[in-house]
Image (cartoon, rainbow, N blue to C red; front, side, top):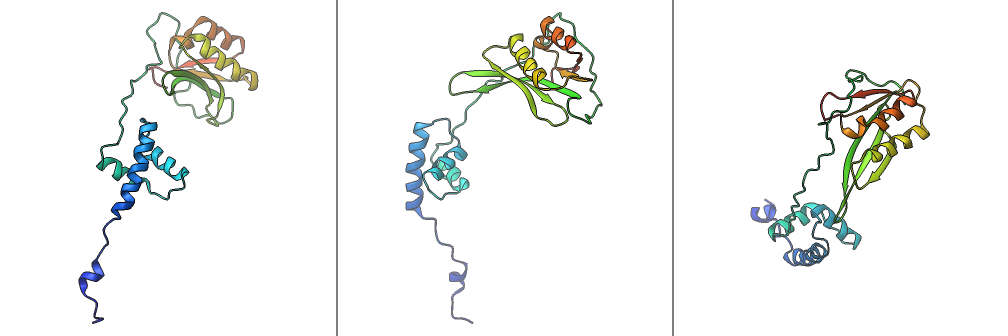
Length: 195
């Protein structure tokens, strides 16, 4: 009707191979400098160099050229509840906090850096879900959790407060329990190792 062949209407131009090669060279440079970067971090690095590029395109180019990284990380256990220290019942099983400083949740995780890693002990308000006390250390000793607890106690109200944690030895240690009791804080622990 219009004199345009149907094939022209449905024609899709091939991807610009030269542009892909240019992006590939940039990706190889970034991947060599930062071998643990995934396609998203490489996309961010390319954008910092003022390149307009989609993360899907970066992923496709990396996958086609075998550049995708996959780092297997060893799982670090932070809870050791195999001890003879006193354990406390779960006081927050069906409790939904209705105000700040009603329930504090305590937990430990680890932060991976380039080569080593560090442990992070945090106290989180159950109502606002904000971190109200924390400490960072190289070991899982009770002194790490005690530092986080003291950090929270120094800035928050402990009246009618429940402290909830797992049954790890850090939270069952005599010094930690003593600080909780001296501050008038009720002690609650989960039945399992998971909060």
